[in-house]
Image (cartoon, rainbow, N blue to C red; front, side, top):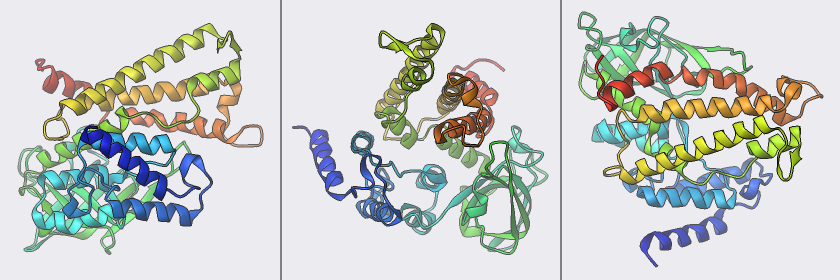
Length: 385
């Protein structure tokens, strides 16, 4: 038995012993069981499985991490790894942060004690992010920040923000930008949620009026934050956690094929509608090829590092797959796919209808798909401007 298989067996045994019955296999667990499950994973280091043990992580390599996710899904236990702390700022600090920043910020992220949000886009700086105007003035041991961010996901519940700010206003726009961390729990920060067509308010406007960011929380060099900000976006678009998770076996749940048979019927064990059957088959083939590409990327990664510009491929194509799937779920239901609320629709019909609307934004946020295609053309394929 090789080391990976031994790890898998030990992992399976630990999960079966420690996962509360109500949490496994989609059980109806209460808050106490979910809290217990989270505490046990944190104690094992599996809230951040691949992070160094010294910061509370599990120290797993990518193959062990993939095995862990597969065993979690086999058991039907939720995969609790997520959030901007774990997927965005954490990996960025591990790669580019100081020892002091890692010691102060990483353990609370692992323990789930803090929520993070991203301060990038502004009303006049969206796709052209380098045109940002939020200013940070050097004031000795801290910066004084004034300006506005928009589309700040989760700002209303965030404890900390990582932000791009302008520290040299007279420099060319891609220069003179710094990457700072600041607490949201201070008088100079005001947050206003934005209500969306999907009915939720995950995005916010964030205003800074003499807000403070400590010099000790400057990540990277002064006026060189554009490089740090771009690297964080690569983690967002295709971090190793995302790639490993996407390449692992998907969790059980309603599939396109199952739902299609439910709404349009089946014939000889197949979806009755030939055109819809072809669309479902095409989507499933594309999804499988996408996950195989993710897995190949994981296996080819050097030292477990997230790839560079190639992550734009995963963001772009993954977004389009997501939109295609939500469109199929709605289309196959006919008029029952149009429900927003009311007794005439079940929870899944309403949920998928709202997800369809929410997913329209997926090809815009985190860098639009047009921008991702430009990055792939220039940085991956080496095509001329």
